[in-house]
Length: 114
Image (cartoon, rainbow, N blue to C red):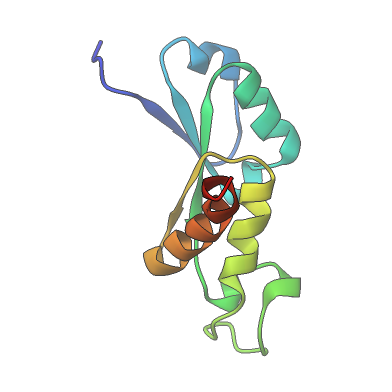
């Protein structure tokens, strides 16, 4: 066993998170699996939660965050990432790192100014 942090990637189901917590430090889950309940359950087992993959194109965003009707047009990715961070996720993967960093930094600003 390595002493490096391990992340178990999960795409279609969470499975037995208790068993995963025996060997992994975090779970990397698809957006579809990330709910407030699944994040809380993972945290209760001391698993960090990293969600993937955030994309700016409308076809990958929920309807209320799409801009225009073209699937390839850019929607409101910032708002989507913010929703998941508010849910308590610990990290995320995105195809638009500048957007992800900007959202993360905005969330960190109030904590830094205390």
